[in-house]
Amino acid sequence: LYFSAQEGILIFYHIKELQYEMKICADISQPISSLVFTPDYTSLLLVTDQGTVYNYKPARSGEAVKLLDTSSSCFLAADFLTPGNNYCVSVTISGEVQVWALEDGTLLSKINLGIEVHV
Image (tube, rainbow, N blue to C red; front, side, top):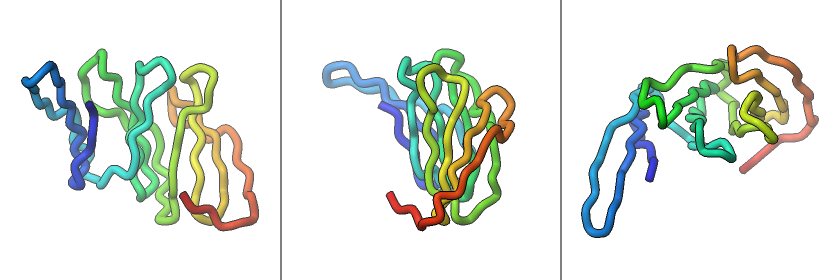
């Protein structure tokens, strides 16, 4: 079970029967608004409401790597663009949809929907 604390800490609970073990996986020092796994569960996106997206790979047990920083206070959400694990898509409250390369955080495409977006 992965979850985030309000302070920006990614925590993993390994639960087996009545026993559990807690592990702090990453500290990004920004409140995490959502966690999204790739379809094959190899990567976990950590999304902040301030427009920063981090990639965490549970098998590598390393730090979360900053993928992109939209520096937008109206940033709403991000998710993996499937099939595959090469791209992610983000959206702002103002309706701008952006496609990013996960490898280096390059903005590949964007379109404005012309409407305000809510989750």
